[in-house]
Image (cartoon, rainbow, N blue to C red; front, side):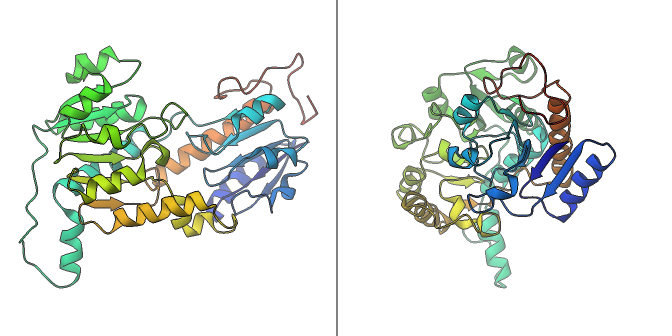
Length: 352
């Protein structure tokens, strides 16, 4: 019998998981609405597999408490909330959802571009107060402007298609250029610094790694046009929040829209409640993001770009298939290097 424990699922998601595994034998399912923490880790003590959303942090300490664990199903594309090195040492497979919302996140990012260009925030705030003056609400066209894509993976590529349809010029930075994007949409690949100098809108679509930590920092923001917009729907740590707050305050950015940002753990209360007192570094980052929030030229949203009904259905379906495939002996969507297939594939939840 394979024991599976899922965390951070609402009632509907719990029903989907329960129904999916009820149709087949060999699984024992335990479902929890809260994120995985050191306090509730004992629920998964005997688990062969766990399913976690990005708000659950699978640390080395938690892994030490899960001696039977063989796989972690990341119910997301990103997996920076999981200690991949610790999983690799224990030969615990980490399986993610490489594609679920290419259009979902790209559509949200494009919406943020429009929101900044047409000053949606001050417009809506003003009319909500019963004021209908247009003074100070003049926006700008995006047609003919240059979009700088940092990362042209699945999401970045989809945003390129949308932006091309809106008659934007597109430049991109990616260590692995895609000739089809150049052929179909006229994208020019540039060095990162050149992209920053040339772009009217900069949109980030890269994973969070050591190499991308503070990819956008104070030094690089000096290269950006004073009128440029910065959009981040990737991961908070890719952008130095303090540097952005300073640039915005000094008038060196036209606008900022951050769906994910450093310190978000402190603000998104319904998802991060119960995780304990945040460390000082997170509190400091939260204060810096709070400073950004008070600018009319800034939009902060609660890591919501992925959040559509259709995308969540795809995420959950793929995560369930990842689990089935792994325990059937045919692992799929395994994060590189986290798992070595044993001589005899896992079956029935036995120890490997």
